[in-house]
Image (cartoon, rainbow, N blue to C red; front, top):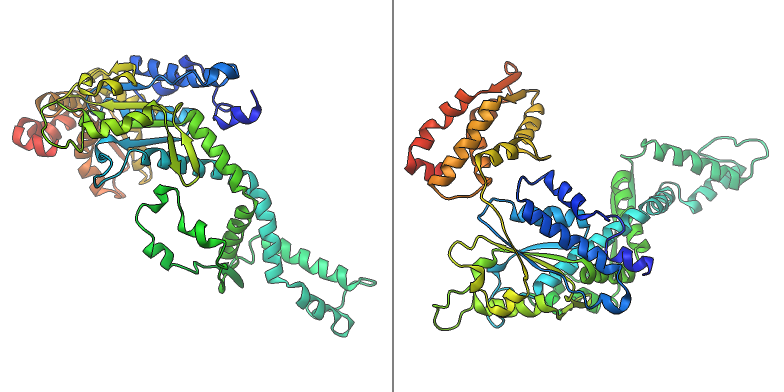
Length: 471
C-alpha cells in the first residue's frame, strides 16, 4: 500500500475504531445506538478494505445501509456527522427530485458529478492551505514592485548621484544598496499595515467572452464539457488595469499566486481517487420513490427512478468533466420514514444493494431532555450563547427543561410526529418575547421556570386547531 493511495482515500487523519466513531457521534446525536453501531462499522470497513492485499481489495464491496424511521430522529444528522469524521467526499440528495431518463428533471448520474465537484473543491482547498504561505510571499514581492517600481527607483537614485526620495545616502553606499534599503523600508511599512489604504494600479483578468456563458446549453457541464475549458486555450485572456487599495490588491495577487502554484492535474487525480475509494452518498427520502404497484402508465417518479439508481449503486462508470468515475466502492446510505410504503416496495434488485437495514426509534420525553442539554450543539446551549452576545445570561431550571420535553412529546403524539424538530418550534415560541425585547439595559439575567413554560404554551397546546398551525 502506497502512501499516496492511503492519503487519497482520506484515511490518514481518521483511523478511529468503531467504538471511537460511535463516541464521536454521541456528542451530537442522542440515542439510536444501533444505527450508530452499523454506520461506525461501515466506515471502519472502508479503512480495512484499503489495507487489504491488492488482489482482494477490489472484490470487497461496501455494505450500503437503509436507515428507517420517522422524521426528526437523527437519520440525516448521523450521515452528516459521519462524513465529517471520515473527511471524505460527501453529498446529501433527495431521491424525490430525480426523474427517469428521458423526462424533465435531474438524472441520477448527476449525484456522482456533484460528488466529484465537491471532492475537487475539497482537494483544491487543501492545496490552497499548503501553498498559501508561499503565495503570500510572492504576492508581497509583487506589491512592492507596484509601490516601488525598479526602473523608476533606479532613475531616482541616479539623479545627481543621490537618492532624491531619501536625501543623501550613506557614505560609500552604491545605488543598488540604496534601492535595496528603500525597498526594505517599504516592506516593513507593508508588513506593519501602514500602507493598506494606499492606491495602486493593478492588471486583473477579466471575462473576455461572457457570451459563452449566456449561450452555453443548460447542463452541458454535466455532459463532461466545459465551454471555457474548451475554447479558453484558443482565445487570449483579456486583462485590464484597475485602481484599488493595497489591501484589495493583496487579495487579488494572493489568489492569482495560489492558482499558479496549484497543480490542477494532481488535484483532479486526487479528487477522483477520493470519490472512488471513500465517497459517501446520503440518499434521503428513498421511501418517496418506493412504488406501491398500483400505478398505471409511465411511472416517472418511482420505479423508473429506482431502475436508474440501481446501476449507480451497483457500480458503473459515470462521465464527468474531470473524467470517468467508477462507483463500485462508493458508500450509499439511504433513509426514509416509510410511513405509507415499506422497504419491500422497492424493486428487488435495489433492495439487494442495501443489505443492512436499521430501524431508528421514536424519541421519548427523556430523549428530548437529553437533546436539549447534552449535545455539543444543544438548543439550550445555542440560545444561551446567542443571548450572551446581548450581555444577558439566561438559565433554565431542570423542571422547565422537562416541561419543554414533555410538551414536545404531547404535541408529536397529537399531531404529526416530527421528532426533535418540534423542539425548535417550542423554543422559538417560548423565547419570542425575550428575543424581541433585547437589547434592553434593564435586563441582565433571565430565568425560565416550569411555570413560565406552562403559561406560555398552555393555551396553544390546549387548542388542537391552533396547535396544528403553530406547533
